[in-house]
Amino acid sequence: MDSERPTSNGSSNGHGAAEKFATVPLRGRTGEVYLPPADVVETDGTFVIHVELPGIGANSIDVRTEQGKLHVTAERPRPQVGSGRVVSVERIHGWFERSFDLPSTVDSARIDARYDNGVLTLTLPKLEAARPRFIEVKVSN
Amino acid sequence: MATENGLTRKETSTPAERMERRRTVPPPVDIYENGDEVLVIADVPGASPDGITVRLDKDELFVHARCNGEGPGECVLGAPRGADYGRTFLVPRGIDADKIAADLKSGVLTIHLPKSEAMKPRKIAVRAS
Image (cartoon, rainbow over all chains, first blue to last red; front, side, top):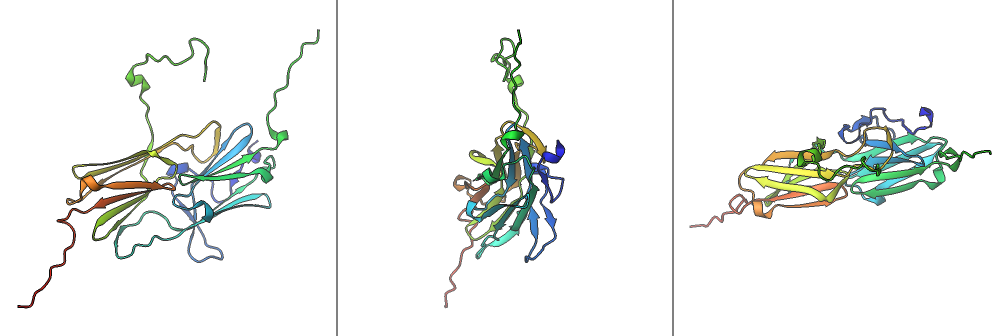
């Protein structure tokens, strides 16, 4: 069962909103790449992945599937301060990246991506054969 | 939800029974300052515009953003969403409380704290005698 669930290949300690952004070593890009918090919810017919990407336009988020993996990349540029003074900085800017292993039960051609209130919601429908089915019990007399 | 008789929640429950305990986490915040205002920017992904509370009480600024929980299903990775965001700041004197403005865009809450006239930097002309 567990092997058919999406797993994050970045880190296993995804703790939703409370999770600190973890850094992964850069590869081929200048600057650091951050791992945005994500969680996965399973229903009978779908997996739903929520990725927190506040302040990034829907056009700046790249979602793609490749060789059984689902990749999410996005960039949040540094804010323009102008003549102002920076008092404190806690929010993270730069590249965000997260990948998930797709279970074989997911219909990867019908994945839906939606961005709302700073959260990217990916809906992964399960293949018809993988959904639970109710079988009618007939009486034979 | 159970709908059979006797299993539905009675509407006559006391206010204390209807109270809901909610989890709150502090959002990451950037603070900027220029001549006219102090700018507080907080990441509150998942918060909706009607769930935002920004209040200045004496010198304390309360910021709260409510998140709706998620729909049905079992959380198989990470933690279920649904914690609210909350944070308090001590604000220096000289902020014009009546003109505080906040806006929410793509899960980022921006709070403008305008300085009162007395706080703003002023250029004093130097006259030659």
